[in-house]
Length: 271
Image 1: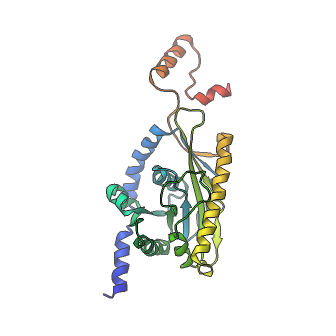
Image 2: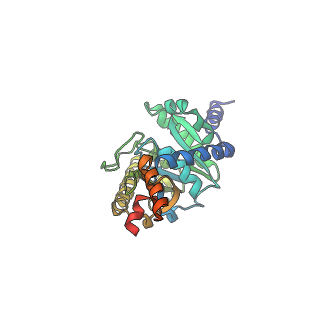
Image 3: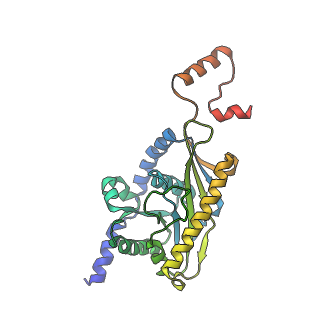
């Protein structure tokens, strides 16, 4: 085998086809786990997702440890028929090895080698019909209010090697509204339909995507401040109420007095 063939074989071994069985089993646990810690996952502008586009890249801000889990649930809710892939720091992926059969592949975020890994693996993913590539180009946690949004150059370099493709900004924020548990708020930005990625340099694409992310974050911030659930589609409902001894006392009081039991704190404002 030539060196090129050896490299291609190594990339294919690193980019494993997601296991539907593992994803299905893990999603049962994941939905339970997220429901314990959040009131709901709400998505704005879900209709902006071009479900049939290929190749398709979804790029996101990186606000929290929860982001990959939110991405898994969003992928299942929005495009369950497609295979989804995402890079993860190789040290973290070695620690959370359960993600390997779910479409995550290793990159070394601490060295220039990581950019080469992303180029090889990203090209492999985008060549597979029906596959979707998810990337957090910030590569480290950043506050949703940080401006400008700074992206590492790996995604821009990948785009500069591509022909026609679609890129979609996805932003995530974790906000407290009326309940004791926070909301996971997601906003889908306007899709970028690119006729030929090679027509611009990598730096140009990196800047364009960072601007698109900032605009999508600003839109999400406005929706978050309005606190209107009707502006979102709820893809997962979690825990509500106050919990603990007070919650038990409230239930017993309603039974004794015959008053209706209002579980969510927000329902008090609807009476």
